[in-house]
Length: 220
Image (cartoon, rainbow, N blue to C red; front, top):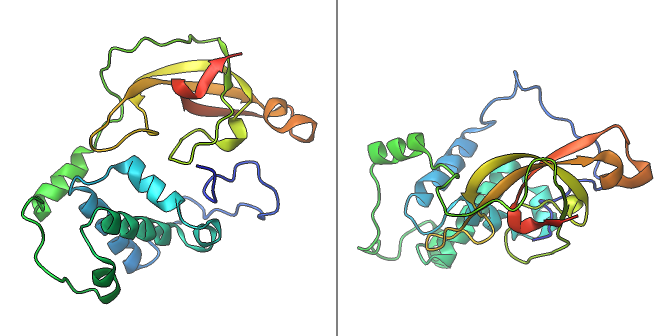
């Protein structure tokens, strides 16, 4: 969806001022560590996945998304998923107190099981009988589409022409990914020249590489 999380190429937001990588702490406060842990632990209940988690953060009002810090957005998204999945009521969220026991159908992993699951991770590349439509060197155009659901196609690339640089293999398609639906499509690295993305006002010597799934693309 088009919202406050997808700001590539936008003007008026001020310069990006990242902290030096060798100085930036993993967490700036203890609550960030807890928000991160809560997000991972509740995801292990199997009611949502990483793509649904991203979409839950994106669905905030854009002003709120931009006002929040990184982990405030994580926490907001987790709260949305907990309520939408029925695991927590609005009253429980407001009071911090359970109104009843957890459903028996939910498997709650213990600390060791949760830690092992996080360490194992979840590969996004899958073995699916899908043939890649494009080859390295092919010119492609990103479809001009504006879905209301989750997508990993940056808005500034839509309608623009690039060249396939690499095929990463078949990867889980994030736009339709739910606990019950896993589609796999070819994932490509696509190079866009600066003047194609930004026109005469951009740096013609610049280029951008974007990883894009095949359903985002059409022949150019």
